[in-house]
Length: 115
Image 1 (cartoon, one colour):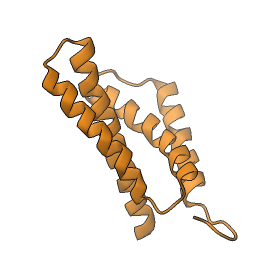
Image 2 (cartoon, rainbow, N blue to C red):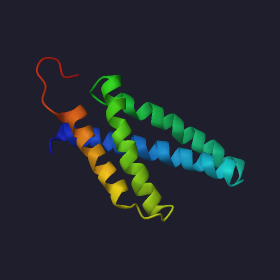
Image 3 (cartoon, rainbow, N blue to C red):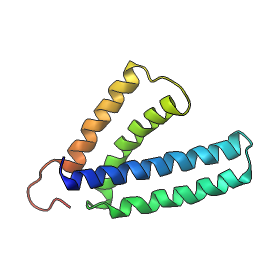
């Protein structure tokens, strides 16, 4: 894996953890009637989610299109590890398709301007 891909993937994972983690904290506050501080921390983490993708090398549309696939993968893993809901075969197939989609969108060679 090239350094460019490793940095891009790390940014995607960090953004995804911020989005899912921040959303989870908001969920806990609003749906599970947990303390307001969880909602405030969740909101701050969601702001970080909005900032992190700006460090990607590609343009906005490409980054957010690929990020959608990363979000699916991370959400599947979050549900498994945090909510203890085992993904079924079709969850894994869908996540695998998303991995392929992310790789095509972000890292396949292109002629001309690739940014």
